[in-house]
Image (tube, rainbow, N blue to C red; front, side, top):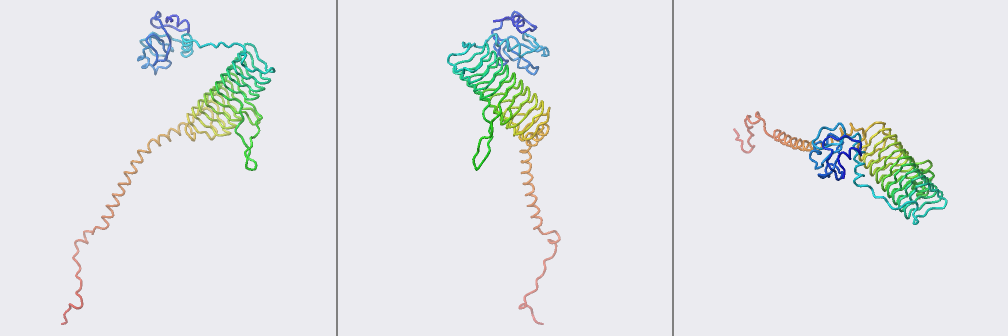
Length: 370
């Protein structure tokens, strides 16, 4: 339990309202109870905040006034995360140092303060810098190097010679350095091409659960510093991603692609091979990219087009049903017009109706001889 005053001191905030209120926990707007504090980072959430049961709220300075007790901070999410950790501290494992159930090669170099959990396998000539945490069941093949304070979560696999920088997080089930999907066909059979490159992960990179990054054919596959990769992402051989990219779930990047810095890819984006993506480009969810994307652009759809062009296309698609019904109505009108025209063509004209009937000559047998 904390008072609002204590919360403000913890997160370096300013109180507006009753600083003596007692708070039992922290939760998002829709889930917060009557003794909890919540957060609102955007004025658009003002109506949701008014309807929330939360007793107090953490806000930025630009948020409009509200009826609840407020703690105004510079960084809402950092402050709220600190509160959540205070009320629900993460569980600390009992493992310290190297578990006797781990298999560590005698030629491996293990830095100070490393944690190696049970059933991890550390291969020959592996180097772990200070503070590396290797989860249970992790496999690190020979020649790999891991930077300081990097966390390898359970059951991830690093193939031979993979390099991971400092302060990285490689989540459960991720596979770094597997062979690329490249084959040469000889005499009707597919033969695996050369797999001589490595995977190099620079500092502060995060790789999501069950994501895969393949080694290069001749050169390295490189993931730039600060890039964050979501779960279930596939990055093929020879790719080079720039710094601080954001790659959402189920993205697939084919071989030899390159991205600039601060590129964003929405969920299920697919990129063909040998495509270059410029700095600060954004690819909307499910974009299918087969051509180079210029810097600072936003592309959507499959095939991916600039956002203005794609939105215009989608607007047209949205009218297809309306146009279809109009087209069917037009066909019915044309059929009726054709029927009327045909009737008019077969109907006798007024002149034909007024003309006297033509007298037919009598047969020769009926004529009298004078």
